[in-house]
Image (cartoon, rainbow, N blue to C red; front, side, top):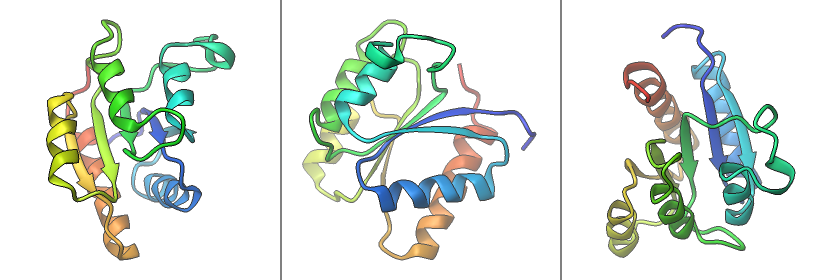
Length: 145
């Protein structure tokens, strides 16, 4: 993988999970710029450039979104639906990164056009390995629009 910087939006309310994702990306994908928001409402503001995220220079479009499902204010599935029905945003790959192994959540996520559904491993080493593999595929091998 080259040293190209990729913009990633992490939508995660759990600060411990967020720190593990960001630390893992820093270790595996040198040069990636991760911006974290802590709830669904803030994610929508960022993506639709509203409020404090109105300036495109300080809130550039992400190339990849890591989206938790269980979020305060606006649920992750609602964020997904709004994103995937917006003309300027629907091509951004959205990876659901959740603790939910529910078949209902899985089906709803793919019905909402999620690009991938990953369940966060409880084991720290497996979590770090998953993040490394995720970054390698989505930011290394995959061609982003």
